[in-house]
Image 1: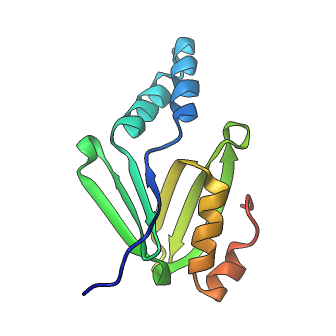
Image 2: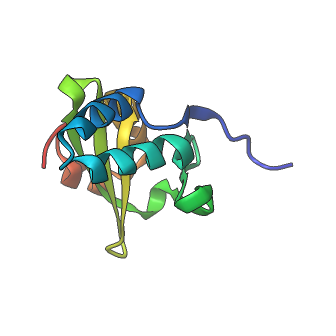
Length: 131
């Protein structure tokens, strides 16, 4: 029997990211940003559990990345949308980075992930919202 995997968050990016980018499309110059937001809204999905972070995305939702907490070296967050959502960059011990764009409840997700990572990674990550 395997170890139970409890889901903390499962879903897509914050809807506010899509709404703001669709409104910005009227400026014409921001159309590429709008296309990116629509693509994220359709195919990007996050799954944060007590064992791993999974991100499914790419064209058609065909790409999947799974990382376990022991691989994380650092987490950096940036609030967006007047703090309703935020972007997170998870840096792995091998130097690769995983971006979690427009993460809803990013403060709660950051706190949850921060509890799971090593004390060294926690010390390097600093405080919420740091760069």
